Length: 571
Image (tube, rainbow, N blue to C red; front, side, top):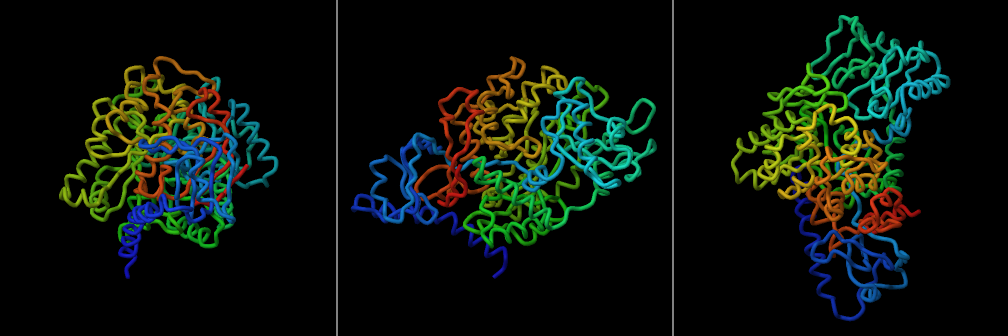
């Protein structure tokens, strides 16, 4: 039996399993004691993300599936001598949180290299590099990620001269938090062969000073000029990174990460770790395209629901532009604070068009990075062209659910097109509360009307899926929930320019972290809400984020993570 046929049968089986399971359960309702459950959660508040019954008191799980949602008195009939009964003592239960846009191995590597999150300025950056250089043999690379100059005074990019002061011999390359720019010292530039006469590749830029010399800053695809000289990580490093991201995610309450890009080697490692039982976190994985790994997926077809639904691979990740902070996002009009540029397209549209049609015909989901209003319009145009190129009946059969990753700056005229085309806006709330400090400078006040337009998209009928883009952001569910409902930075700051009316309600934010990402992964019949027949995935918090003050949300922590009815983390 071919790989494609087997996965299609698996997809059909997963679609029907909750229906059959629920039907069987209804047959025993009211017939005396039920079969004992494996796990019962009671003594708290259960938010189900199910509009028909949004709040409950208890939940029971058998064989990984939810068998009961309701009152505390009703759940007692599922207790047996082997049932694990957890008294929540007032804590709150939610459907398992999903990070709808993360970079799985990138999070792990961040924990293993020089983590520059929270760096307060150039002097702090240089001090951290100096400390790492002191413990690194001469000539070896020093790499790190996480700096962002928009919170510094002065707000300027670091340069090779800053780094040369403390690292004249070790090559240094430090990636900006967004991953779309980096700074190299002189030693690294020499290794990369970057000089005043160097020209950037398509989709990238090499920043130069007034004398025409490279500053050390390389943007988007120009990062590869340096990056290809950094030694590759070995298999042990990659395995360690996966372990770290798994432990961290379960501790925070994530039950699934939707991995935005990668390789078949990543898939092989995940299969190995799921096979030996050492990795519990669900991963919905995209492969990088349009060439390489993506082409193999087109040929072999999707992988759906392996290892009790923990692993699916049915998506290809594409890129159209860079990031707003490094002025790589493609805009329809020039940057307000850099009138000579409108940003960068990082892919040739003609190279994408035939791939999109082929992906649609093969039933492969596409997710495309688009941040600026020009890139977002181009994405919608390209998707629309692909949809028009295949018969409507085929498009309906394939149910593409294609995604726009980031959807940050959209011309208001394009906002209704998401629902019209069935395109899912994949947005990261924490980007908005970080970008509010520099986006007005980059865009001017007029273009902010289409910036992070959550309320407008939701009221038009769109299902926004919320992610963190970690390691670009910290990757914590409470930060994402807070950002969605408060639309303020972590200190509580915002202003009227930032359109507070675009904030989500708490019910919307909950669905953006649970039910709607399940829909985007074709898993809404399997997970995403606490409903009989779905997988028993829960995140249990020590406070009620649906009622407490906005500031208290940031103080809330995860105390219990459950996947497939198995307690995989407890505080």
